[in-house]
Image 1 (tube, rainbow, N blue to C red):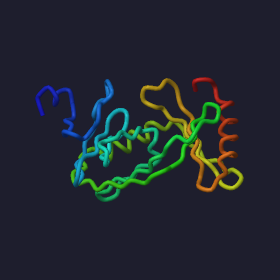
Image 2 (cartoon, rainbow, N blue to C red):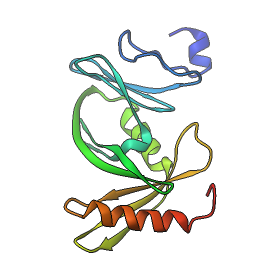
Image 3 (cartoon, rainbow, N blue to C red):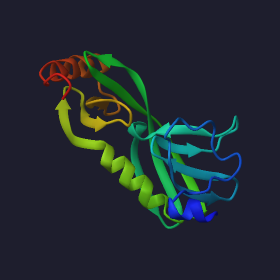
Length: 172
């Protein structure tokens, strides 16, 4: 690492560990895996994949946990919208065995936690849903995300999510 990088606290990125970084997508931490790297940036976590590295945005990581030398993520995807609420579904649990974790687990935990402004669970007929207000890097305001519990009727969740979103102040 050069003196300039150390003074500016730049984290070196191993070759092939990320795709094209967005403008101002600062690298915050890097961890070595047995095969590849995880790279945390201001916009998300770059993970290795069969078709090359891909960024998982912080607002699509529902849960992150660190135990022993394993980082586990629950990754969600957007399934639709109900008024201004974004509907999510957890689609994948990913586990990464880190051979050199360095600061990455702490950065992941901090970024996922910092994106959440409020979270509450609401019981609904046949199940329930999490209502999470999140700040998304590069987006003005707060976004309401609604993630249904498994087995909860999607139409019920969408109706309640729309009603909640319609009662929130504009640009909250």
